[in-house]
Length: 217
Ligand SMILES: Cc1cc2nc3c(=O)[nH]c(=O)nc-3n(C[C@H](O)[C@H](O)[C@H](O)COP(=O)(O)OP(=O)(O)OC[C@H]3O[C@@H](n4cnc5c(N)ncnc54)[C@H](O)[C@@H]3O)c2cc1C
Image (cartoon, rainbow, N blue to C red):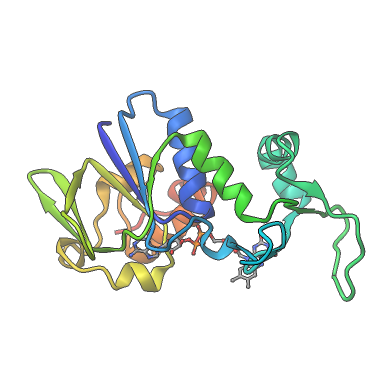
């Protein structure tokens, strides 16, 4: 697998980049393009211009680990805890509903530190202020067009932005009936609609399960 682009530097994009780096030995070039000026997406941490130590998580503020997640993904939590990125949330929060067996974690350096950790692990080249507008197929390569700057070609493109933003993309993908065979192959599916693709990128586990159970035309 020569050149791979991940669009979006939120949790999905950053973790996807880290997993690709870990699992795919033939990966030669991995890039992440993010339209914002920093990573995080809906897990963004803002700092005070007067005091960088003073931060606020603008989206997600804590991570819940249910018994189900603990069983499936304990290594992810362990790794983030070992790096000091997550810490058990022990302070009481007024009105918080806790289910039996759940644990909550906070990120002492801000929730975006989770994303930064995965991006660093991935070794990907991360570019900010690159807003993808079009994706075309040119000689078996995906040509990705951005708002400003030259288009670039990739063997595989993973879209991690929310569905409404995927639907705004222009180019060949609009007419292709969203047959993202190349991309979906990576995560174990054969064919899919854009809705399904987006779901899959949000939850790789869910897609693998779906693939076994359903066939999507
Ligand atoms: C207010 C709020 C509170 C939340 N609280 C919690 C919580 O307590 N616990 C919890 O676990 N979850 C919480 N969530 C959910 C959690 O934040 C999201 O599930 C998670 O951040 C989604 O990550 P993502 O990478 O899938 O998407 P996003 O974070 O949306 O990442 C997509 C990225 O793609 C970029 N992008 C979009 N279009 C383009 C384009 N054309 N070109 C290039 N880049 C593009 C975006 O800028 C963004 O950075 C909360 C969400 C919100 C909004």
